[in-house]
Image (cartoon, rainbow, N blue to C red; front, side, top):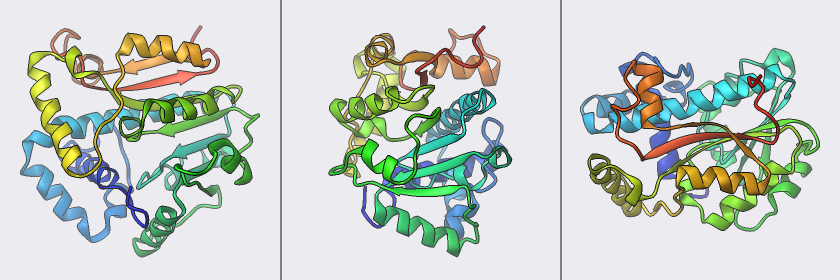
Length: 285
């Protein structure tokens, strides 16, 4: 995190979302503001992606993590949830294209106050209006108590809430991850979507080299991946925290759901996105 602006990885993720709108025509995840929020950098970002095929897999994964998260959010909204909390919001655009605004959904963006100031300036510069349904919840993640700061900003921690927590977990310690999940688990009727990498020793041979290259790039940027989870162990761990897994999507599921491939065609391991809840998933029988 660079206080006063988004992290390099948050900026990169925004670029992947924008490039997906052009290079794959938003096939997996449509975000009408993805290009716009990048302003004058949008054309360069897309062209860089076009000329760098090695970025395709990461771009698809980032599109998938938003699709999985927002599909789960839609189910929770249909079941009565009226609060959305975006943790570490960065350049996320959900609050400004909120398809549930007419249902009275409030969106709380939780981030460092300096980053929020930078984002508001960016929204003004790119002509993206801030809806009345958006609330900025300033939090210094290194010093503040998350639940206390959210409550002070108007989040009702006794009401069903969906937490979007994308592109954050790998950069935190296990203790920091658990502290946040404990806040989520204490909210009745809560749901959370977050992404995580599998441990390197669980990767297939053809995935390990690509993973190591990405991890090295993150380390060079000063934002190393710290926390990994084995998928089965994560499910058990979440249960111990008071959460249950409603969905967990990796390369095999991505191939099957969006590309019509056999689940056995994709290498196992790598980045995954999980949806967990404090109640049965709204789609369950």
